Amino acid sequence: MASVVSLSASGAAWSQAPAAKSVAAVPQAAAAPTPAAAPAPAAVPSPAAAAATPKAPCANPNALGIARVVEIDTTGGPGFGFEHFKQLDFLRDHEVVLTFDDGPWLINTPSVLKTLAEECTTGIFFPIGKHATYYPEILKQVAAAGHTIGSHTWSHATLTDKKLTEDQRKDEIEKGFSAVKWALGGTSPSPFFRFPALQHPPEMVTYLGTRNIAMFSCDLDSFDFKARNAQQVIDVTMKKLDKLGKGIILLHDFHKHTAEALPDLLHRLKAGGYKVVKMIAKAPVETLPQYDDEVLKDAKLPTVSSRPVSAVVQTISE
Ligand SMILES: [Zn+2]
Image (cartoon, rainbow, N blue to C red; front, side, top):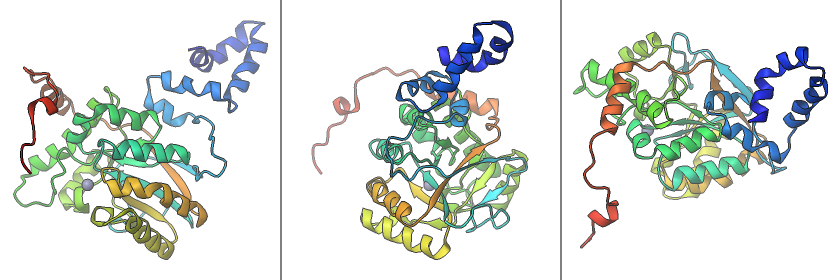
């Protein structure tokens, strides 16, 4: 609490209280990396502010870390990732952006968070709206760790599917963002969006432009969802990365092999001289009220039974 007050009131304190001069030195010292200062940012109820605040000191001297933080102005819906969008070549040689799709999910997402924390590094998470409503507490952990969060539709529908009307495509996008916002306790995520299966219907690309939402394809796809084991995730990713020299890497925190591969993958990145870039948005997404209401309505459906699933559903043959 004290550190929050000192941050917001330091200007006034300096000019008013004579004693404040000595106090003023305290925030300076407190800003230096001390383990005791670490819990303070978690108490601040604003992930957006937390994202901009320097994180707790890194306990791992060999950590991959974060080399650079870039802020994205999403006005007009810029596209990233050379597999589909070739205008914005902002990464320097050997710079990478880690991205994680399809979470939040039990076990695998917490495992990914643990690995990222051990390496004092970060990524962009593109959660599925429905999954966010299943596991809001896990998504809150992603935010609390200071990672960037965007959205990946409501139900992971492929938006090029001819059976979907234009309104249904918009619903998928908008309800996805509203669901993530709901799961984060009302804090809007970044206006960062990834199309399921990297299928980009042109009219939705245009629509996202009008909504000032940035689109993320990737520079290299780890194909982790097809991998038979963790080693394959590492091999495919490093082979492609060594060829390209840099890039936005597509991974899935939803998948077991990815979670298992991540510790070694991050070691390989470090050993290869790669550096992680953190991408943050200049402003959060502005969700549409009717979709916020819809998610709220879904979440408030009266539940008659509060028994756990294991008490209700029993596998009797398999
Ligand atoms: Zn996906």
